[in-house]
Length: 207
Image (cartoon, rainbow, N blue to C red; front, top):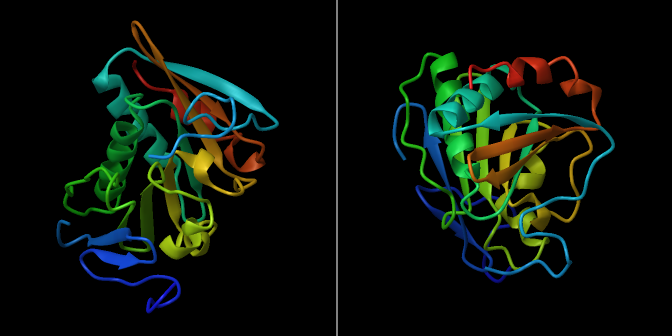
């Protein structure tokens, strides 16, 4: 990176390398490449265990699902949100982030889509939450410049378009969102025992 500090460069909106931007939102304030493979855009390769699925008929159900997800999240968790454009990845992430603020007795923030900032980071008491949208990345090596490699395994990380990652975290929870005529179906998958006891709680929504 020419003239750029390695790793993270913070500000309201920081930039590094090839216009890779990210911003941090504290609890007290606000804040197109195509895949070369033949897989559908936004999909990730299957992991070892298919854990089940949840049908979401409308936006309200998506919001409830995001809140249910937030109840299970803890530092070190990574959630990969896969699906085509318009599948509802950002809506689900927004619901989860808002619920995490509520869980820590913080004011509900504005949760913008990180489509152009690429990463939004939220500082909560005892928790750091990252929300990344990797759609605009040209190559997987740019993930390092965003600081995500440091965050994964330490903080709560929600990643849209995870197929841009060079390597998927082994213990991540994959939420594969499929668009149907009558709503959305979310398939939950993970190869990690970390999620086995949590998945029934996530899927237990009044949808």
